[in-house]
Length: 114
Picture 1 (tube, rainbow, N blue to C red):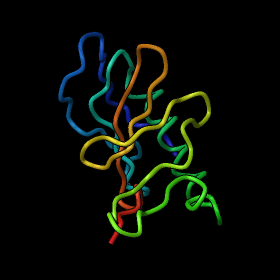
Picture 2 (cartoon, rainbow, N blue to C red):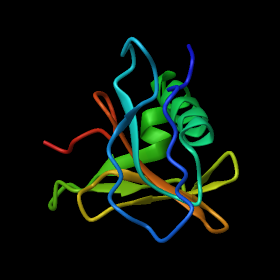
Picture 3 (cartoon, one colour):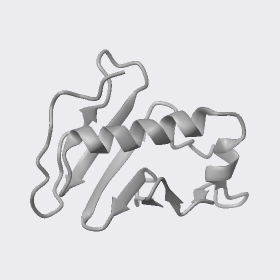
Picture 4 (cartoon, rainbow, N blue to C red):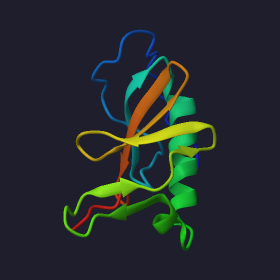
């Protein structure tokens, strides 16, 4: 499972970067975008690690829960492997460490609250 070959320098202010597939061919559906002060390779490594961890039995419930009235996700964890985890306004995961950050999404996470 190789990380995407394309990289984004992210050497400036946060900006809208294109979604980067973290695997070729796409097998996980994990994408990173809005990279800030971070290249694609380490962003994909962290994103894929979160995806693998989240897929293990019981870990989804440890990561997030859906509000019973709001039907919006709420994170139960605030960090993962040294990265701070938060949700963007659109409900996607965001990982940040020091001055680096990126948003991530995938076909199976974050879990939509239906």
